[in-house]
Amino acid sequence: MNPLPVLVVVSGPPGTGKTTLAHEIARLVGCPAICRDEIKEGMVHATRDYVPALGGELNLRTLRVFFAAVETLLRAGVTTVAEAAFQDRLWRPGLEPFRALARIRIVHCTVDAAVALERRRRRIADNPVRAAHDDLRTVDSAAHTLAHDAFRRVSVDAPWMEVDTTDGYKPGLQDIAAFAAARD
Image (cartoon, rainbow, N blue to C red; front, side):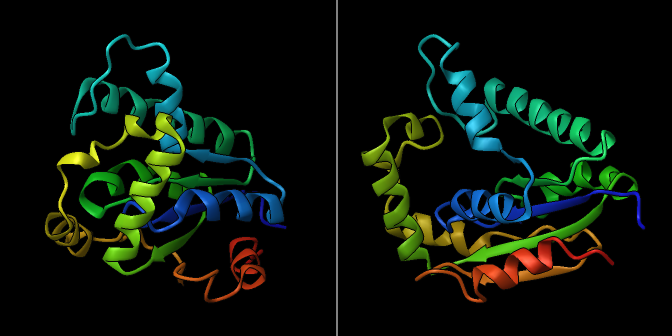
């Protein structure tokens, strides 16, 4: 029996369905999901006059809390789903130390840039708390497509699976959960 828990890293550009998939994987595997955006949304409640900004102080605090929460769970032997837009240059340094604490599996979500932008706009309209992450009033589709296409997936040395989230999940949810829970 392998004593290390599994860390399922759910990644992809904004609007690719990462958070929804992370919660589904956690439900099927039977473990917690730690989602960076949900941590940030909780911090926004305690931050007066918050304005979304890339690289802002709240983003840096969120990152520290996210990695600390994941590390605490892994050190306790808890299989965990960790979800964020894990771009390689920004996130690999935080994930690499977890290789000694867990068996890492990477699930990378993909979808067309136009679908991702529509999802981002819809989730902010449906849930104003999501505006903590984006001010999409200033993002046009060309700029969004450039950023979406420039996304570089995390390159931690670990098994990975690509999931198309355009209409459901391809491969299917049961296959994704089986990959995530593999006991090799």
